[in-house]
Length: 325
Image (cartoon, rainbow, N blue to C red; front, side, top):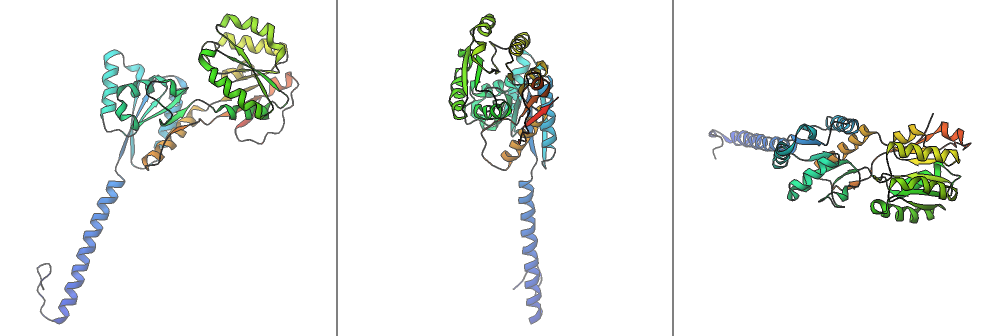
């Protein structure tokens, strides 16, 4: 037998040539393994489409980039929507969607809306982040992958029960056209915690002064949630002031509420939300399934307001609750 062009000259030569053949096969197998490893570690290109250059989105993008930097063989392109208008914006979105980016991340509702409208057939590649009520955006359903700004109602109520243990009746401000589902969910979950959620329905902002005048005595605390009919900076400050005059603490949902005098506020670290989005991307790149995830958050208890209302700040055993001066 002749192997690799050599011809055996004696009996011991056959062993030598068998060894040469084995080594050659090992080299071939090693080369194939390196090729396969190269395929598995190929570079991933991620596109990040950001709705606007405002602080929450910028912080989220920076947190996301930091997390992506920890994943081997990942590169990314960042696009700010506010730099494009009209036809140039559509061209840019179509370029992103038609390219081989995986995944494509939308930070903010405008970016999410444009991506999902651009090509529904490719929505499996899309991830949304920093989007309130994502399922109200056309094309985004419960199976879509992303990080919303919706803290589950039951988690909010659990924090309220822990952070304000003396209250029983909570007045929830909301426009029924916007948040009737939130109210009904809150009412159901509140009963499990021996709480009552009282509806303060608002059809227009001018209804709020009479609502406070006539019904404030019915409740122990006030609760404001994201609702464009109810919320403005001046209205928030007015409701907080009226509540404090009657020793009614207010529950809000961001740092502005806390700074304005809310007793308890649900606060986001947008950089941390970006890192959470990066964790989700890391899972996607391994082939893990993906769906909607609630956001990481902290609940801030306002020590100044607690002292003003003579509410005891108990030792709270929770990683997500902070007492802030």
